[in-house]
Image (cartoon, rainbow, N blue to C red; front, side, top):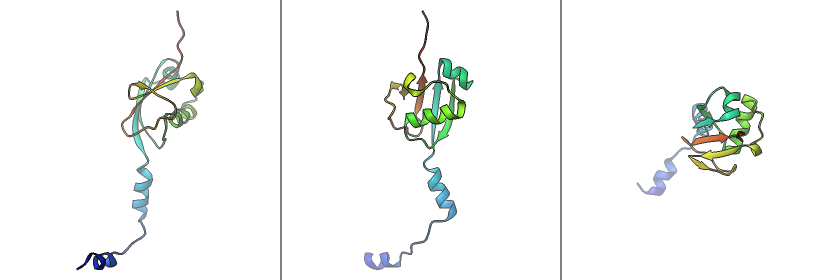
Length: 107
């Protein structure tokens, strides 16, 4: 059998509902988020693992801000991705560690 003959025998089927659900879920990634100071207080946790479809650290912060009513805008918060300070446009991937660091006061 030639490659052309074998290719001609391939039937294309529409994806099943299960396959479509799997594709939709494939955008989910599990990340660890650490909170400090005011954000830790507002969240009630110092860290958590969560699943998200967010692509960037900014999208993640905005999602968490809505979910937990964080009072600080992202412009007042520093972000670190995998133990390095990062720009808000950085892409997050499976198993990343994201740290949101609000301004600290003291003397």
